[in-house]
Image (tube, rainbow, N blue to C red; front, side, top):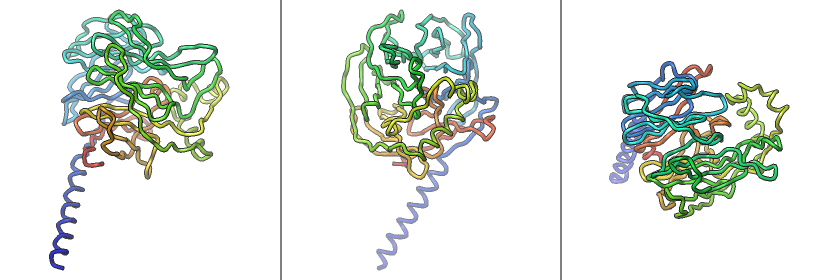
Length: 354
């Protein structure tokens, strides 16, 4: 009995120490003067937040702002900023690469403008991969049906290959909008392109930088059906969407019909870090977001649940932009105050959350 009692004491001591570790692993900070960010990304010892045409660089782990650069406009080194398009930024080894509406721009590590290059209109989230680029082509229309396509481009933005195509959640000809949007998204990691094709279930296709299919990753995920309660929640979130507010909900529903699929998408987000795939699913447990974690070959490593992730706006979801990112065993995500005038970033050690 004494040994049993001692084991119980040791168990509860370990539990207390583990819980304390989780509390210390959480950071919160207010990002001053940033009210409507478009994306967040972590690169080594820095965090990047992009708001409109301005790029903010923060040091890690103290989350102190180091600098900001970028300017709204149409001149050299400037970029446009619209409610219906999100600029994106990628940290390269020696420079920052920014994708804007009609061009891509390069900035030095101290924020100095280097050069820019015109790009095809209607292509979002252009990302360097090897000697090429990959991006989301938003409006491929055939037989009155609108598709999204993941396209590989060369260094002159000539099409090398179309890697994937799926029906778009937003149909401009048929005038319908799907809730929730099941978008065709991708991620680039170590010169490979990971394309999530959730309209076919839990499916991720992996391509090399030349566009050659390397492997397909599949998994069995239970998809939640969409009933009346879920439809009501989806509609409420749609009304709160920044792009919907900007255009006016009444104006939108006069121009488009809202449609609901039978079930929620198998995949709602994809992040790759530390040689792991973090796949956000539609499953929720006690209002927590679920991530399935796999290695790069597709072998399952476990699940994590994360509380409080802000729902990605419709347009951001279509453009593959998220309010969270993962790096070095931590998740960084943005949350908004009641009046949406302040932003909070939290860093949580997810290695202890499996």
